[in-house]
Amino acid sequence: MNSQPHETGKRSVPAHVAIIMDGNGRWAQARGLDRSEGHVEGVNTVRRITEIASELGVRYLTLYAFSTENWNRPQQEVATLMHLIGIAIERETPDLIKNNVRLTMIGDVERMPAEALERLRGCMARTAHCTGLTLNLALSYSSRWELTDAARRMAADAAAGKLNPDEVDEQTVSRYLTTASMPDPDLLIRTGGDVRVSNFLLWQIAYSELYFTQTYWPDFSKDDFRKAVMQFGSRERRFGLTGEQVRGGEISDSADR
Ligand code: IPE
Ligand code: IPE
Ligand code: MG
Image (cartoon, rainbow, N blue to C red):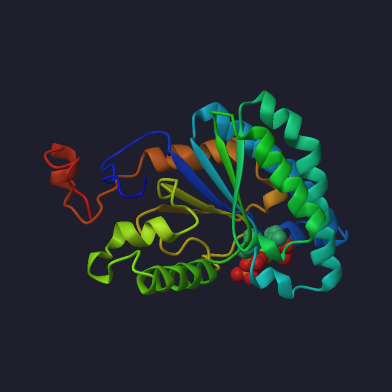
């Protein structure tokens, strides 16, 4: 799907929103609580933001829930997070079905504990028929892992005669990524005050609009999400063209890169 031409100009609702959900630990520490309390509260925000994204007509919501680098956190925190993910998925699945939300995931998920993975896969199977929002969780994900894995599989396919190196283009690369079935994110939000992308969707955010907020993830509200979407709607996406070209609409659909 990312082989589709970009949509230039203004569009009020982004088809794909990606979020770096950051600030759980600091939210908890500011209250004298254990970091894990921040993760517990962060799960409530996931629920809230899934609801509002769905209500607004967003098609894909990709949430960065756990990075490859996060495996290097203290073992206790990692274990708590994995446990929480499993519990939350089990608890939320009926509502996901009710709200027509389909769960998908991207990342090196084989590294996850069997119990959490089993619950995630169960939820994916039970929501596979849902046709509303796609809630895509990035788990044990990093962009460099993804690109390395894609390169490895492309090389293997080329060696096996299934891929002609002369025909490899940008669309080919996109097809080997974990996001092959989705459009690129239109909007990338990062909560928690840091202004960096932390190894998230590096290829896919080439032309995403970026939105950074100081708000810690547990405090991120439906109105905060609406505000980000509104700001997105007021931006002019040019994809390398001039403003006149975009506003004239003369090549808006042929501006494929
Ligand atoms: C984001 O919150 C959640 C994960 C990375 C799993 P953090 O745990 O990174 O919170 P801060 O950035 O330390 O406040
Ligand atoms: C990014 O947050 C990863 C997730 C939100 C899952 P981090 O807290 O790991 O990012 P850095 O370490 O501050 O860059
Ligand atoms: Mg953080």
